[in-house]
Image (tube, rainbow, N blue to C red; front, side, top):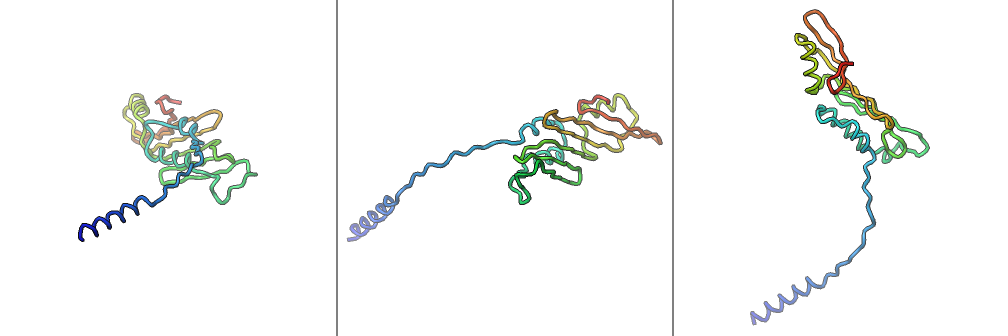
Length: 168
């Protein structure tokens, strides 16, 4: 009798497992599109400081079309991104593409090429402060430079440099 009840229980469990219907649904096509890839490729700098990369990626990932203030009839949208180390102002078109940016970061780590060029040309000078600026335009690309304040005793001087370490 025990075997009969156990076999009946096993048959009941097996039949429950096979009684479920599996519905096959075809999903609609999904298109993944990177709208601001050109901005990221142009401003990408392998030696840029972490705050710079973080803010630039945040601006590139920002989707202006999902915000409450979005309307199709505006030509552009200005959005500011601010952190303690710097500020980025981006202008988006109605499709969410970045048209231009102005970026300014204070006292960030300088790239090796800039530090080496400063040390070669001004060996006894100390860096007091620096400002990293980026101007991006969709048609022209990005212009990146450093404005550096140097001090040697009671003398101070300001120099402008490109990201490659060239004096401007």
